[in-house]
Amino acid sequence: MGPIIILDKSAIQSFSKREVSFLFKHYMVVITPILIHEILGDLEKKPKKDSLNKEDIIHLSRKLEGMGKICVEFKHAFYGSLMGANVPMTGQIPLPGGIEIQSKDGEKGVFFEEAPEWKPIRRWKDGIFSDDDKKFAKKWRLSSRAFDLQGLKRSFNRIIKTKTINNPIELALEIESAIGEPSPDKQQLILRSCMNMLRLRRSDRGFILSRWVMSGHKPIREFAPYAFHCYKVCLYFVIGLLTGFITPKPTNIIDIEYLFYLPFCFVFSSGDIFHKKITFLLLRNDQSFIDRDILKSDLRWIANEWDTIKDNKEERENRFYNYGNYPPDNPNSITYQMWKKYMKPRKQGSGNIRMTKEDEERLMQKLKPMTDAIKDYDKQRRINGRR
Image 1: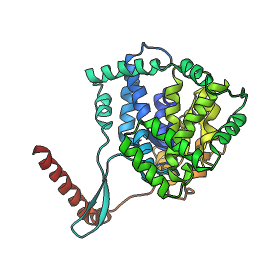
Image 2 (image 1 turned 135 degrees about the vertical axis):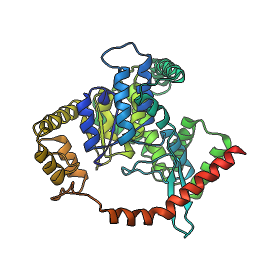
Image 3 (image 1 turned 180 degrees about the horizontal axis):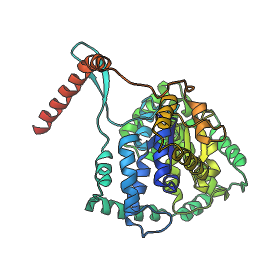
Image 4 (image 1 turned 90 degrees about the horizontal axis):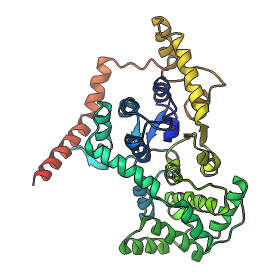
């Protein structure tokens, strides 16, 4: 458990197996649906530098299954935000499938069913790639190439005449001028744009507009914060294209999807030029961007440092006792900096978290009412499924 991090595929694919191992040791990795789709899409790629082969996918799947957390797809969070759901915007990971359950003694809790993405990941870690996986991979590769960004830019140029922008600060000022007007008419245009992005049904649109009117015509950034974040990401993309600040390329449409997930982490890492240009404009004050190459170099250093003690049992035990999952003390290490910024200070004996048999029995006894409630829920679901 470490700082919550999201990585795009350009970062993941650049790491060696050793570096991936230390990534999962020192960070809590958020697995975004777009990352899974991109990884699977490599099944249909001809082997080259920017693709993962089957062996790479197998290795990553083994790591992902044991350590990563799959977050909800951004479209569901976007929709929920418009409908009034409290989508986290301060670094929490929104997990899919939360169901409220209650034990017999009245204690309440939330049970998260397994995300459907775990099923293919379990197959991939065993080297099993189904025909459906390969069909999806082919469909994914075709769809990622089909989006006509040059055509999109031309169509908007016929409607909007925007000056050339040469740097990200100018782009940010242009965006704020486009969305900063607080008038109800302007805010309603933003809200309708959000609904158009999701192609919502008329009934949903009516409910959302009524909710907005009942709120007193709140600015959309307050009315539906996560939906506003997604809208802002798209606005950066479109205005960046129109002004020439962003160069159109087919993978841009994939790259922007990673930015929709930024509220769900504290650290984002990528080697993509597009991400490097605009990500920092979309981050909260308490978030960090790490260039992929810097993170890779740091993970390599951590791995090499570990190699100096890996054959010394006493040194390994001392390291675990004193550090646990904390990285080695090194002010020049970006991972050390992230831990110092986002995690509690390391204490002597950080790795000495051992439970006695009595502690385990007390814990299991305390958890029993909730585990029984989960079993009852699962049993009832299976009964209903057979009806």
